[in-house]
Image (cartoon, rainbow, N blue to C red; front, top):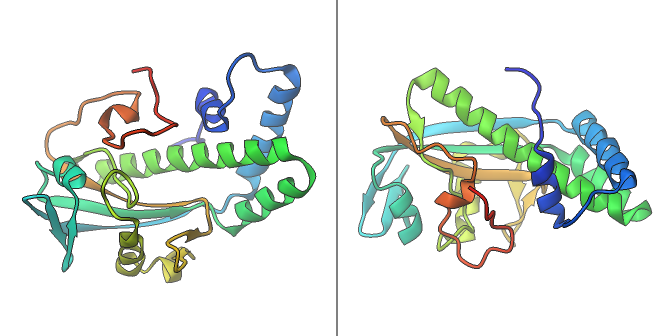
Length: 214
């Protein structure tokens, strides 16, 4: 499906950079972006499950999660896609290396890796939709809104990510490698509203990273 192209505005947003981009910063971003693309070892896995949503509770695969926000997100879905993706330990090593020699490059690497992961998740969803012929609701992850982050471990277990893609979670529910995501997305037969602003679908309040533009 071609090379993944990052949105430079999103990279700058993750960096929380405002104002003009100097030639030196532009050079650094280009350099770090090339390094991240070179070092990343992108891996993913997913599984489809039937889901039932009743009174703020979401049930699938023998689990029952309480989350009004997730229930609202899945209200028109009878199935969902559970997915996980990681950029690999190599990116963690790269970020730590930059942290010891150049704080700006470390910040850039964090932002570039985050945008790379988001774009890769978007592509995975497009591939899934193409294979199965359905559409997907906006993805939702443990820790968003009122969905408890403890459910991270259940996703890791269900998808067997440690064995399949080398992704695990600590006792504090932090993922290793750190540049990784677990999420679920409701399946719908009707096309979802198209928007360039994913934050329009997010119910998380008080987020410092929220996009303003649509």
